[in-house]
Length: 516
Image 1: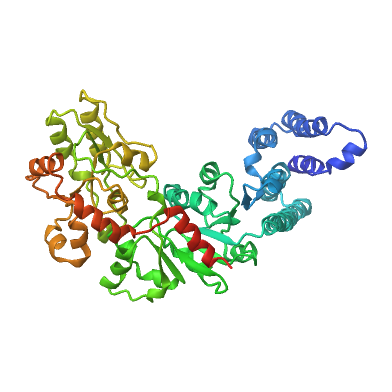
Image 2: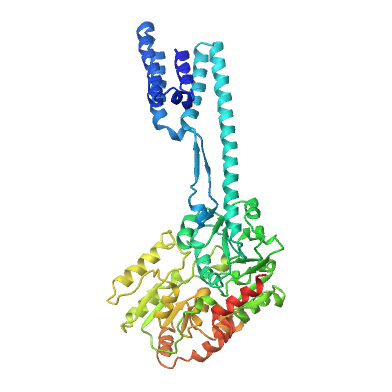
């Protein structure tokens, strides 16, 4: 009986091309062939009355019938991927899938049935079926893999040609663990675009490509997952590589020494990433001001001064400058809880007393609460704090903004002062010359006054410690004499430079000097 079933399965492997050539409906033939074992089983049950074999055989037949039509997941599926995005000549291509699930499933069924038959009644026929099924499985997988590789090579070559035709001069290289870091790219892309120089983005991970292409839809993006991909998709026309972070995979591109490698980072702050020793490996560091240079030397990282280029922060160009001292709107913007102990400066877990204090002043002060892009509101650690902050703001008579999702510059411009911690946010806010209230998360007040790393920053900010006992003095000072205003203007130049040109133009000139 098993011989009958396996023979039927073999007939089902008849190439569809032959059936089509004979003008035979392949679907009907396949359905008919599947019915043969069931008919055979009926005859077998009447003649032999062997209900154990009958049940086993009938189960196999039903199993085959169901999964022949609905069991695509039981097959082999290989996908060829498009590695270049946002290019017109490539948009007509789609990711190409190769699937032989039904054929593959039938062959697996032949193996199973032939083994069962051999166990019940060892025959040469069952042995031949087993060997045949095994060889067919291996051959189909090998052919499919070979075909997939050849097609992938053709697709890659087409992508390469479309990219190389553009003759880009700059590659903006990016690597990150997940999509939450995409703001690194969004931060710089508009300013690279305004240079008018042809460039493309090269990213090392595909997990966030959908989100990236949605947010950056007019710049070619290459997904280079392997080292060979980097080399394959790197045009000879490229003379500059730009970086927005110190990702571990940056070394994979830095090894190309015919390119000038420029680290821009994604913000300037007193956090360790702003004086990472890894920065030594780049040919040039674009920094916002003298403070960024001094920070490296103060931390024992000796980099040739000629490798630094002070360009300001073009991202602050649209920040409004103001000398107002009356607080009507407060921006509260805590940083995220870093991966390592030396980057954990978040004030999120200490903000509730400050928010309650502002509301209890009954002065009609509006609060804009903004979370860091890398702060997850739903983790076990963070969720209680976010829930409590949301509840406090919602229950007040003032229409506050909870978890603002606007561009950060909008929040800067709509606020009269900021409450924050150690991050790039207060440094950018310093450009506005508005008051900065710094919450001393890690009890560093003594270092703010004595350590050269903090003492210049401390001259420009109001410091609130963990006791919250100087809140009245701070708000009174801001609303009356605004005593730190002149210091903020001085420290601003130290952090942001002093230019007689628009910051966008300064950045343009710096890029043009580097592009050969």
